[in-house]
Picture (cartoon, rainbow, N blue to C red):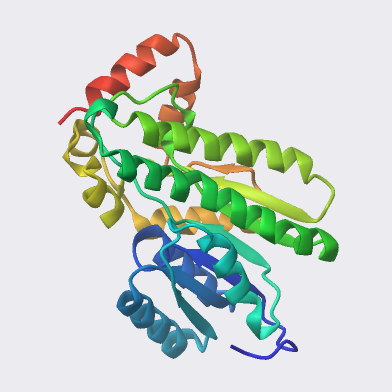
Length: 265
């Protein structure tokens, strides 16, 4: 890492080893941010870090961490600050999605998803805010989902609930932070071509087979632009915007039934 006198802002990105997280890292490196990249897969992080160092002369620190472990969020925050650097941008991208009925799901897998998608995001946000508020500058980008606009998601019930939490938290924080110089943004992509969806089983659902998939680079670019301009919510793509509006309109029972149809294999 560069020393504290470096004028480049610093961004901490969780879940940075692939997909939207990796593309956000690339988008910020182009804008001359120094980076701290955190994820479980060390080799992928190192490859991305080397790419960004070569292409953009970025200062990149890699932290291999399983953020679903107890106390991992605080450990990550402590490790990030060991070089005396202040975090100017926090990107809460780490998360997981699981498809299937609640009754059939593994209890620990669901608990891990809830920790990653909600608890870790909230903890890192709380750790970042005091310093940002003191400096009267800072930006937080929470990677939510189009699912956050939906009343419910039968077939991915807990995942949809966690993304509703992220969107609700972001909207409330945006109001709390008005006039402070600190902004918080929720990126809410629809179906996107990433490993995230393949691993959790979402790629097998009708939603991913019937609807057009967005590229991770496109979603990330929209999120970074929205974050840097201080927008509260970003829904990339006109079709996704229509789905977001539809999910918040009554009758919600109809939207829930439609989601149940789309989330079947």
